[in-house]
Length: 243
Image 1: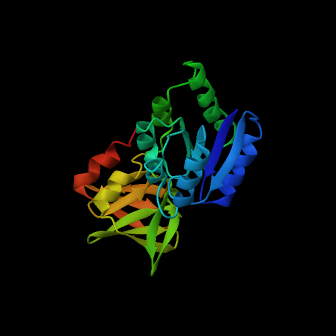
Image 2: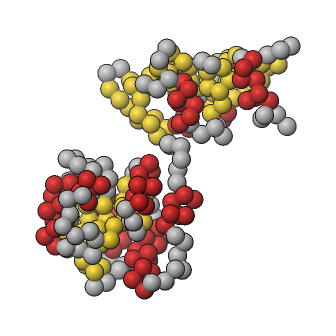
């Protein structure tokens, strides 16, 4: 029997893990916590064999929680943020469950615990799994809308315009402001979809309708009717897509 503690600030996240744990009677749930401070207290009191640990929580992060523990248990991270995967590997976490995950994915994470105890190497190494499954580019981002921040799906961005040190993101009929300059955004967005066509413009290929060719230049016509000029310096980005 192994003692288990769940740490997650979302009740739905804790509930899902409780539900999935019912398939593993050898794992006994002895406690839960919804913030970093309570997590430290609960873990140090019960000395679990395994914890399911969220990363972004009120008070302190999951990594900060670990630094306050008297004994370090086995760790399976359960989080909505993919950018901490390599750090999780560095502290020898068993696995990194990226929300939302399936029951089958949860089972594979628990199997890592059993495999490690048996000293087997039948499972793919965690580092390799993280590299293969890592979402290098974000699927959702936070951007400025008036006096608040809102979340938008990256795939819904039609195009991006430079706006001084900032950038404007055109999403449907709405325009949002990013605190990043256009060059930084070009690095952060998946180049399979987002192509820079001008020092002041990036377009999403999924929303490109056609390309108008002139003697020495091109215009990109977007599906919403917008037209974006391709500058000479970025002409190769377009030509590389031609077959």
